[in-house]
Amino acid sequence: MTEKAEDRKPLLSKKIDKFFTGLADAWNFVRRFFKEVFVPPYEFREVIHQCYRIGVESLPLISLTGFIVGIVFTNQSRPSLSEFGATSWLPSLISIAVVRAMGPLVTALIAAGKVGSSIGAEIGSMKVTEQIDAMEVSATNPFNFLVVTRVIATTLMIPLLVMYTDFVALIGSFLSVSANEKVSMTTFFVQVFESISFLDITSSVLKSILFGFTIGIVGCYKGYNSSKGTEGVGRAANAAVVMAMFLIFIEELLVLQIVNAIRAF
Image (tube, one colour):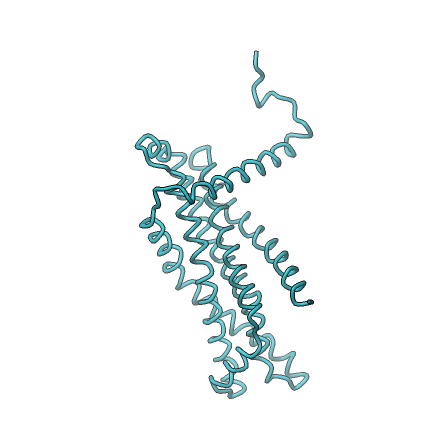
């Protein structure tokens, strides 16, 4: 008589076994994505629809946040620089901070909260109400239609949102600098572009692509594997946000180490 999975003796402990089983399931989910993304049919209309939802509908929140970040960081940096009579360095400092770290990180965290939770809850509700099973019966590939399209959309739109956030943050910083140091827009942006390098822009874009993929794949994974009715939908949305934010910080740390190593050469 075969032994049920829940009655089997754990190899290490139930929590440790569950952790490694979850890692294996996540790896298989990611591997399935890279397999399905090249398999027709290609859902271009759904990708465009998700790009609109992820990108355009996030613009008001991203605009307000980026603008406030630029003003706040400028006002916080001014007293420290003024002690050394170096307030003229504000544009350079802000541009380096925003392009290298703050723009991608702030945008990704906001998207993880807004987009990640939405994806997790949407797919989770379709899972518990058996809509995904109905799609399979109707000869539609639910993984391709639900997961692949959303991950592609987040991977494409997060870098665009990051560049937009950088611009809005620099505008907010310029208004703060102009009001206090009477600096023209031309002078401000000349110093901005003189301070950032091609490596800064490249690393920011690549990091944004990684963040976008992480937000999409985590939200889809948590939603696609949700259970236990409406309670499971709430857990999937919450877990998608928490896990995406955690992975974003880990990726930020790893990318920073790689970029610093490249700069050292």
